[in-house]
Image 1: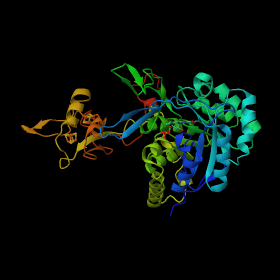
Image 2: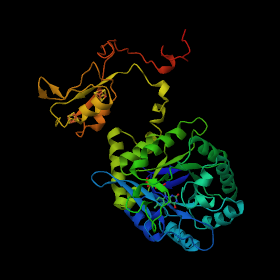
Image 3: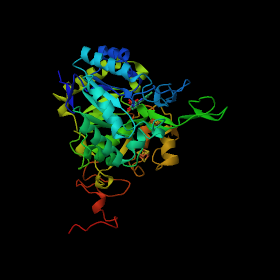
Image 4: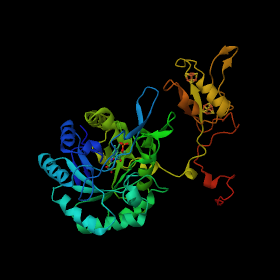
Length: 436
Ligand SMILES: Cc1cc2nc3c(=O)[nH]c(=O)nc-3n(C[C@H](O)[C@H](O)[C@H](O)COP(=O)(O)O)c2cc1C
Ligand code: SF4
Ligand code: SF4
């Protein structure tokens, strides 16, 4: 059986599945249920500074996007950090860590951007016996207007400064949680590293409005007729998160910096993809909120089964394996030629591929052959874009078939080269450097 025990930034857990800082980790009751279900660790719901607890709205705090089957695809929230008393949280953290010593207990923190505020809270958290802290520089709503959360995460200089304060004032590993609401994720990651961060985690939620009520013209979730932007998460944000994780993993300046992957992880496969793109572990929120804590057993079993089938003995065999295959567009092989192929036995003749290709692509799929409704690819027109594969309702009915070297591409009339050739050396590239 594959070994999925994990060490992330020096923090050990029996598996790489942690619950992200959010409602599932807001109190001992939830976290104990999560640990009983098998989660390897948690990042406790973000703690704020000492004083009267924060106040959340008393109305709806979620907006959502669903698929046609009502499956939740994206969740938007306007919740703040914890609204429970700091000392109640600290007592519970200490007790849960004592009761579950083998699980990772990381505490998320967000206090004002002043050294004194960080200096005050760090010893309190350290005293609980927690394994590490996560600095919440990601929350895009409510807290950012108070100069915290993404207001810090959007300014690399602040990230570096606060990280440095934390490293100077605690022995615990420091994980910096990044906001995706920026242009280039590499800059905040580099800043965290410069400040001495032991790791980064990403993504926090994406600024969003999910819908507008067309009766009262209020954005949802509507609080007495008004709405504000919230933070978007769930399966819909996974592609954004995967790209950002990969960007950090392949950046020469942050190479080796541990990354905790977060964003839309719902299945073991999602988790494996994050690991392959360089994440050292993963964190989950929306999937647990949608399906409950027990989904972790499928994640664990699925990951182990896949690793066994592939001959991966431990997570180190998987982590970062896809990173060397992430490249910039200009280095893609322009001599690689594919054509769509329709399996006539599987085709249900719905016509979606035809209309997609006919109206918006390359007019490369028939609707009728010899007076009969039939969908066939016209190789002379097909550019291999795979739009038809993605709109076809029958999985694997349309496949993309590469042409072998030496075969003629009937669209261009040219023989397919077996050599690799990219845009940097292509004759049509006006800025190419001649390769004499
Ligand atoms: C209701 C809700 C509250 C959240 N609160 C926090 C928080 O207090 N601190 C934090 O760092 N992230 C918070 N998050 C963000 C999650 O930890 C996570 O980064 C994000 O939801 C993406 O992961 P997911 O797609 O698995 O949900 C919250 C998310 C939700 C849905
Ligand atoms: S791969 Fe693109 S061009 Fe070819 S048939 Fe499909 S949609 Fe048309
Ligand atoms: S979309 Fe798929 S099922 Fe529908 S006609 Fe095209 S190949 Fe057949």
